Length: 52
Image (cartoon, rainbow, N blue to C red; front, side):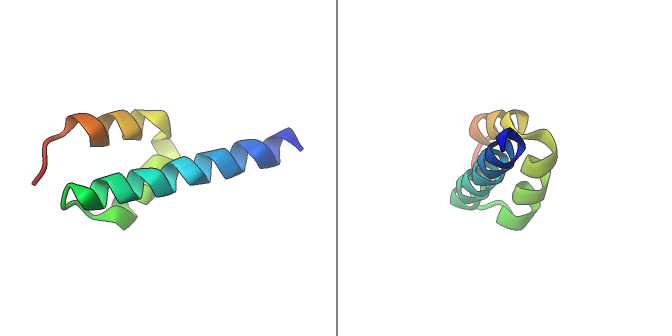
């Protein structure tokens, strides 16, 4: 059961990151995939990189 909760949280974070990336004129689907691999590190990168 804990793995399911972990997976739901990870996917939710990836969706949030995709939305943040789109807000900065970046490709949301690419950031979604990157976020699936890097998780919170991708969030940090999206937040610190400037808008295109």
